[in-house]
Image (cartoon, rainbow, N blue to C red; front, side, top):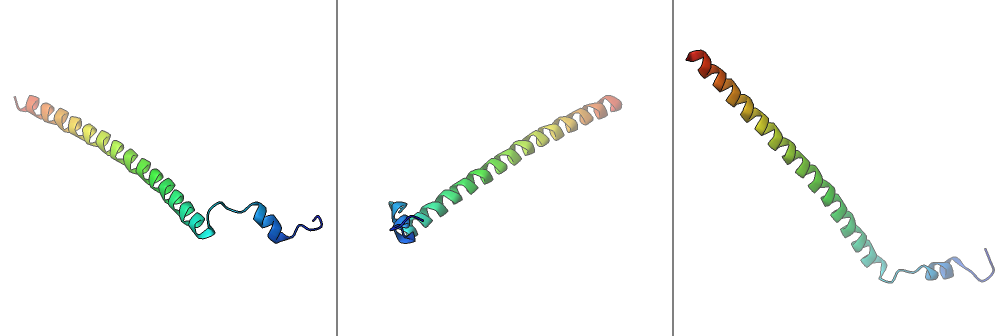
Length: 73
């Protein structure tokens, strides 16, 4: 290290513009937002897949019902 540059002085150069406790709150909030965005994507994808599955079941049931009516008639 160069003379006159103590760890405290170096820390002041990179000081946060907001207090540290506020910075940690901001970081936690950003992290929560990121996590919720990921959760939202997963839930949306699951709902989409569920809808596709329901449609497939519906058409499968309709086709099996039509086959039954053809056999009966």
